[in-house]
Length: 394
Image (cartoon, rainbow, N blue to C red; front, side):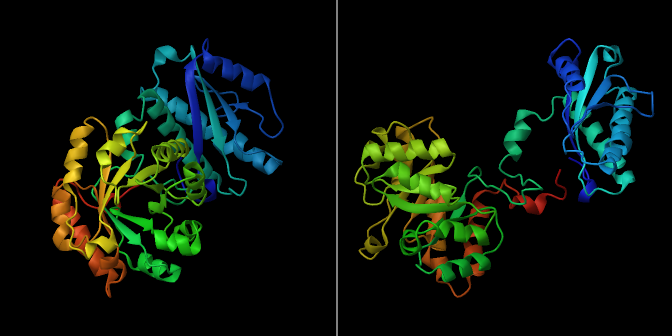
């Protein structure tokens, strides 16, 4: 995809041997026509095709001669010229010119007007596609590196995943939607912040509150803190339908319910989180499961904080030792403040869950930045927020 506006170019391209599947697609495309999508051979000018020969297939239905002229004019010439130049530049080997063929699917917006831009963008898109096809681009390392950073330009929002801890999870526990939205709007921009639709908020408004938060924070990772105890698959489905990126099951639920919860979350592609609040033996509970969760929460309840009970962060090391080779994130909750955050991170926490310290602060942005700065100090090799260091997006 290259360009902008109505003249933007989007090329999908196959290149290969005449005697192989690409050659078969070339022949079938040329002989099996459909109304509005008539394929045509690319030419640099009338009667001068490039080598390898290229079959151009319109993506958008051609409904009139004005649309046909855009395909049979600037788009056709651009694709053909790009192929010829790729040969001249050594991108396509000359010993393959008569044995290879190309199929190029071309997008022309019905409202495109500027022929020069149509040519310009389709030429660039075809050259880029050819170069990448011939160099096996992208390498898998590139795919894995960018898959959680990417924002599709037409979709317009990013779908974040948990891939680069540590994170700050802000628990929106106050049962006021208005207050939750105000908190979100006052947060500083950071790819280390994730949101939690807290249990009190969900109990007051229902799981649909996740969708309401999504309207304010379309790019953010949102967790539905369901604390499911039963009917696990049903509750995961409800959270998924409201666009939650993750859902929480209580560690007090039966093994059967937790297994169903994790299975359904995995099936739908969202994160399964177990909250071990008040669970006496988290390791034994984990051992009883068919599959481990994505995230484990070591949680000291709010009502327990007042008793002075110490947080059980030592469980992180013990769980890691019991399940070596298994990837899980560890979140800690219950009285997390800037003065305890460093200790939690050193104990192995990947996610700091913070509620009142931020959500009830008179200066939400300042309070949040206190934690963001701590996270940054704990990962000195990382550059910081991703988007601040991207001066160009492909």
